[in-house]
Amino acid sequence: MYTANHWGGSFEIATDGASEDDDSRNMDLDPGAVSARQQQLRHELDETQQGWLLGPPAAKKKNRHVDLGCVIVKRKVLWWAFWCLVAGFVLVGLPIIISKSIPRKIPRPPPPDQYAEALRKALLFFNAQKSGRLPRSNGVPWRGNSGLKDGSDATDVKGGLVGGYYDAGDNIKFHFPMAFSMTLLSWSVIEYSAKYKAVGEYDHVRELIKWGTDYLLRTFNSSASSVGHVNAQVGAAKIKGKTPDDHYCWNRPEDMAYPRPTLSVTTAPDLGAEIAAALAAASIAFRDDAAYSTKLAHGAATVYEFATRDSSSNHHQATYSSNRPEIEPFYNSTGYLDEHIWSSTWMYYATGNSSYIATATSRELAARVSAFDDDILDFSVFSWDNKLPGASLLLSRMRKFLNPGYPYEETLAGYHKATELDMCKCFRRFAAFNFTSGGLALFNHGRGQPLQYVVANSFLAALYADYMEAVNVPGWYCGPNFMTTNDLREFATSQLNYILGDNPRKMSYVVGFGSRYPRRVHHRGASTPRNGVRYSCTDGYRWRDSKAADPNVITGAMVGGPDRRDRFNDSRMAFGQTEPTLVGNAGLVAALVAITSSGRGAGVGAVDKNSMFSAVPPLFPATPPPPPAWKP
Picture: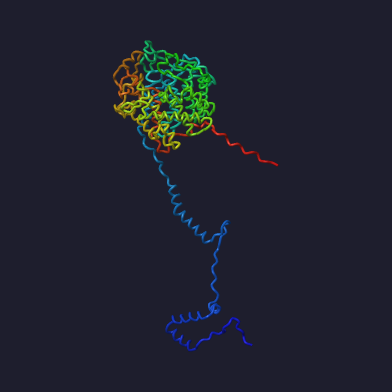
């Protein structure tokens, strides 16, 4: 039986012997030819025969995978990703970590500008105006203790009325403008505390505020919850009087020997409201001193209740100065409803009591005071007598930063519009107010003491520009004209530049600032030498009438200012031009700190948006608690 070949073909590969011999000979001669011959033989074999000759094919290397749960990835890909991350960390992350760990120098704030320098000097004026027992650190060597018997005739005031500030070049303590001055200083500290710190005057300005508010707390029974009268001033004067008083005599405060009566009033809707505003604003500025802040807020609530106790009726109340010959010629209040809006707004910010903001945003009260009447030009001028522009700006602040909505939105929108119109009137192009040829705005129509009105309204202009910056609003419309925040700042800056020397006379109206400034200030303490001689009431006339420069430089005092033709008479007898006032310097300080760029480069923003509202509760209802879990 023969072995079968089921696949076909022979088991043996037949070759030609002659051919093999030829191949052997050729191999010796050309190995390449042998290789070609072998390739030819392979092509002549079928697939199975080639498999016997070549053997089994090499096994393919299996790829390993990693199951990541959501996806299966080749292990090789994972390794590539890992090493890429390592390389990225070494090339990018490590240099960043090293650079961050290297200690860096804290960038220095920009050098103080001229406004910061003027600010330091302007604050010194308050040190020169202090009454009472002065601290050793007062910093004004020609001033000493004075007025230590003030208020001794007021039996209801414990410890008398020692302290506070003299108002101007005389030695009277008028509480109405004094309170307004403290409100202005506190407002500037609340908005620009970081700037005050940057220029190194934060502790100083707060010490000056406290000197004033400590005194204001003594003008009534601030520890009670209700009072029936308030002391309006200490000292008095008669126009063209012939008996010794604070105007007839020319004495240093330390040499006063004439009577200084205390004036008490039982109706003071304006004075009481302004004292409440001052104490409330200061309570915010001193929020870091909880005990003192609480004391100020309590006193503010007490005197506010006294000022507004009859405000619900529509009959006209008598102002604190009505039929008061000791007050009317000097600080006669023309109304009190503006102080009610002003003080109730401050009371709300200080306490968060919603009854105060309900008063401030009352449509009836706004109508009674003609808050939205654009036809009365003088209502646009911020001053010790007219708080309406300041109140409008304070309420606009609430609308811009808190946006409370109903039920306040309608009235707040009205005050916001009034603020924008007030700002429009500052610009010369709209001809609301006259300007001198040198560029000074005549907010009081060319009468005496023009600069105190200029600085107060420059403060509002710069502050409103900062409000808009804080909420990223570039400007607003004055009719068809779009005005920018820079336009407002340029207006305020131009007015301060005028006061500091950029005027036709090239004269600074701040004593001690620059090389040319008033040398004969209408001021008893500055004009009378401290030489160990106690000059009597009329002996001081020799210093009043002297044409010599002041023996004591009252640094930082802003005088009344030039007339409507930019002329200035540097004479003590020209009191409308050369007399400084507490209100004037308070407005100057506020405007300077608002305008100065000192500190802005050290992370200081436009304004402090939150401190003003630290006591204001949430204006929207709280989220209700979740319902209790259901139980079967």
